[in-house]
Length: 400
Image 1: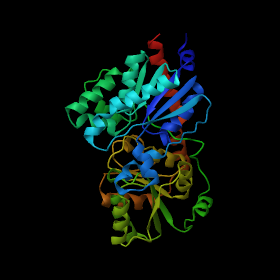
Image 2: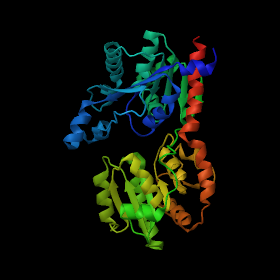
Image 3: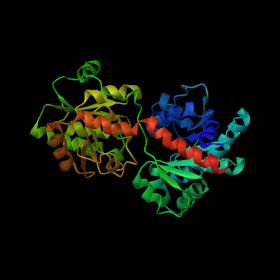
Image 4: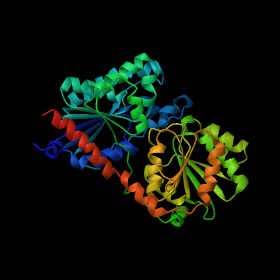
């Protein structure tokens, strides 16, 4: 039997921690190539409480409540898997077994067929995948995305053993960047690893008329718009961007920096903007629907990713797909995306001086939009899906 025919008969079980943005996009592209897809989405019931009752102590859970339970294709079903836990290291270490038992109960109660498991993130989804492989004797693929591989296994020996168990149980490991691969190589892991980056939706992210997008978003037509998109978390570096903007306006005042996202440092950023007198130059736009982000990207002149650490940073790919240049930090992921000054500029993380300097350079430069668009094409989900399907075919064939 050919590898292609094997994959066409795959009933895929996806274990993940969310079902929005890149994970849903990936599944939507893979689904037509597979027989059936069943998605088990880990969800903390605290998330539902936080979503409807904005209690400050529950803010960290609120984004997890936003699960898109719809599916584009009839062969895809989504199963929320509710698990109570508190956001402590000790509780998170114990989450694997509870996550596994919840998923297994759903599989048994719903009589869910599957002959391949793909887990996104090594913990706790990866642990679930490892146990399902052992119980059902099916091939198991795990994707190490970010903190689950560059942080968790290096926190202490117990975490290291947990992550190594998952990775060594897997038939194949996917990770999204070379920097993540370097972390895996520091562990005692013998499983084959393939680096496959995240992709972007070409039906959403493509060039549109900037003036029309600005009108739709009520943005000023005569300003240079600088955009960043990301959760408002310390690791995303928005405080350094705000400081950089303070320096930028010393040179030119025809700018507006738009920060899209929500998170725990929102109030901190608000206070910083006010303290620096930047209310006329920085807009905290809040969280926006994923399908609205392309409008903002097309409306901007420059996209900035100021993160202190990124496993990949798909938002910069989405900006490039709209023909926009990027200024990003050397954060572990952006170096593998902004590989040429033709597409953007790189700066050191947590360095507002250099960030301001490169923003000014980028705003003054005439960029080759066609070169940027051509480069972004290599990151379409259609192309990335072919690489993932190759992995599915390999591990399925090895089991025959």
